[in-house]
Image 1 (cartoon, rainbow, N blue to C red):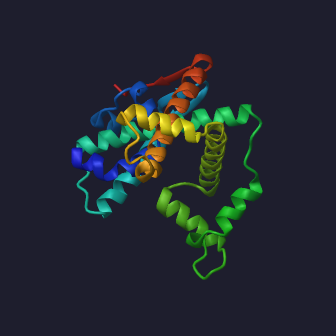
Image 2 (cartoon, rainbow, N blue to C red):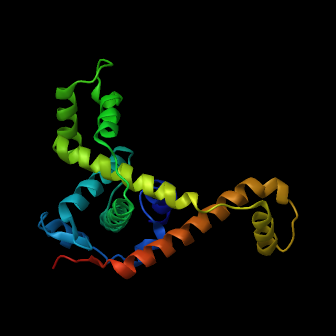
Image 3 (cartoon, helix red, strand yellow):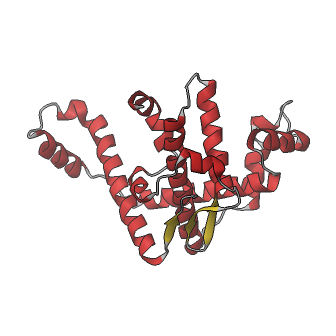
Amino acid sequence: MISFLIKYKKVILIITLAFFLGSIVYLGADAYRRSNFSAVAAKVGSKDITYRQLYRVTEDRAQMMRNQGVDVNEEILSFLQQQFLAALISEEVLNQSAENAGMAVSDYEIAYDIQTSPFFAPNGQFNKTAYEAAVKRAAGMTPAEFEEQLRRGKLSDRFRTVLYSHYKLTPAEIKQSYKIQHGNLKDFEKNKKDFSAQLMDTKMETAQKAFFDQFNENVEIKTYLQD
């Protein structure tokens, strides 16, 4: 399990907010498989996240790992389920925040992304039939469901970018943090780039946690286990 986490930590963290996992209720593998896919796995305010949504994204990632030769056992599957439930909740929080701020993703943007994607242009030109077939085959969705998912992903990314843009590191802050952590400035210039990246990650996690805590003061977030 440890080697799995090390190997795939970047893939996993890129789709979720690690600090938020502590608030996610454990979802057992047996209960998950017995779930009614129309049942609610979590709620963010009045918005439901269903087991069907959770199953779809979890199975997609699990199948990718199987294709890479990973033995996706019960422990890994349960871990993925928790990670993706956190990701779905995080995306919903960001979407609701974006909508409250008046942000939106236009139909034109969605159409452009789809029509310029090489996945839907087998001969270099967009093919609607190929698009509909690919979405159904690969994701098990209707085009409308796929487009809504794409819209939500773009909107949450857009809000996250705005959130991040308010936080920057000054040269003095980087140097002072390095000195505190290492006790001196030896090899500072040599390690400055890597240290700055790590410091920025830490700062962003802190900022995200503060944002989610504030959101949760006004909007209730619930997670559920399937009995």
